[in-house]
Structure formats: C-alpha cells, structure tokens
Image (cartoon, rainbow, N blue to C red):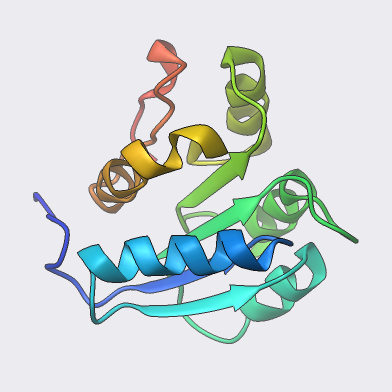
Length: 143
C-alpha cells in the first residue's frame, strides 16, 4: 500500500531539546500532512512520558538530549511498543552513526543536515513499513 504525503491523519511525537528544531520539523510535517496531530517535547524523559498518552504512528527523536538520549529512549520504547517507527536524528552523519542507530532499534536515521531534503521521504518510507537508512544499503529491511 502506497501512503503518499497528505493521505493520512497521523499522530507524530517529536523530541528535540532545541525549540527551533522542534518547530521546524512540525512546520515541514504539517505542510505534507495538514491534519497531523504533532506533540513536541524537549527531552528524553518527556519523550518516554508522552509515549503512554497516545497511539503514535511515528516518533522522531534527537539523539543528544538532556536526561535521556535518543538511543536510551529507543531501548525503553522498544520494550513496550516494539512496532512504532522511530526516526533518530542527529548532528552526526555517516554510516557509523546510522549503523549505531540501526543496532539500537531505530527504524530510520537522518543527519540533521539532510532533514530538509529527506524528512518527508523518510516518513513515507516508515509509513509503508520499511526502514529508512540511506547511508546503509543493507539496512532497508521491513520493520
């Protein structure tokens, strides 16, 4: 099933400790999915608290956050909600970081400098049941 941008009401949780990044992600996502419900949180502890409040279609989390990192949060999320697609974002680029995200249980990885060009593609890929690791050719398995 092909789920194009704009076709689904989505519940998306965004965690990043920088308000500008959270607001920018929200704006880009709302351009593609105007009816999406988006919750914004500023650290890993709030991310884990928010997991329990709603059925999330996608979680987008920064790795470097106060209290609990994105990688640590993924481990906790996977214990209770193993099938929620999780996009880990980071200032770091390269296959080593993408591989670490994959090993930690992320469904997708993007360096922040690639978000403008690839965010919607990454979300579409996750909605279609696939992982999104453009830097890792071997990690494009179904989630």
